[in-house]
Length: 282
Ligand SMILES: C[S@@+](CC[C@H](N)C(=O)[O-])C[C@H]1O[C@@H](n2cnc3c(N)ncnc32)[C@H](O)[C@@H]1O
Image (tube, rainbow, N blue to C red):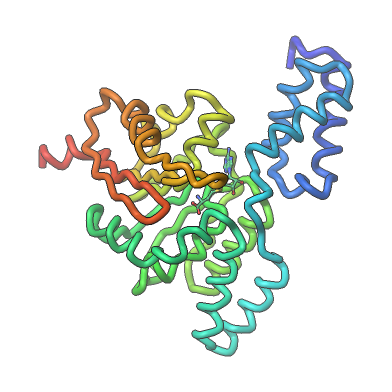
């Protein structure tokens, strides 16, 4: 702030306001927008150029092209379904929400088996964090067919309506509303949990934030890390398995974390035990 001149501060404010009021990126956390505006203002003297630079970054970070449900409408429908105790309708609305975003849509055919196999390795978690979650917390009933209201489900994203929607759903399910608007690149999650999910986002995270993946994984206060990658490219159907396997092993090289690999139709998963040393010593 000390070395920031007046023009730079004016550009930051103009850019933050313009993006926060825009239709496409206005749903993004203001802290994230401001951080990007600060970076852009260092490189561009004019707000117009800085706004363009921030929009380009947000396209990559928010990936709006992956899809969204109509949050207000589905939240209302969920409220009605819970009020009427209509289990079939609740399940259908969860599936519709998962279907609205590409990452969860691709996982639908394998969803129950996916979490079954992962938790067979980690044990059934009492607490979980879903980082860069998008709509994945709506898979709650497939992850935890018999959850209790003691389950702690932390979820992090920078899309404000998405987080509000997830908390609305959590409350309806009787869970604490532990979804947070939090930029995990600016503030690594601090909560403690049995398992952290970081699904299908590491390649984008690396593209957007460089070498932050390894310190993020090291910082997470969890016993197990579950990190996944698409096994085929969205465009063109190229097989990405061996490329992402190499990438994952490089990312945690030298950390001595035991890794189990699971390969599902469309998704390559690494289940990593962070607390191996501690539990061996018990
Ligand atoms: C590809 S989607 C994630 C899909 C989800 N993990 C799944 O597999 O179903 C990427 C999500 O990451 C979020 N995101 C991107 N950068 C982020 C950051 N720095 N902090 C928190 N969330 C972020 C986006 O808003 C978006 O919802």
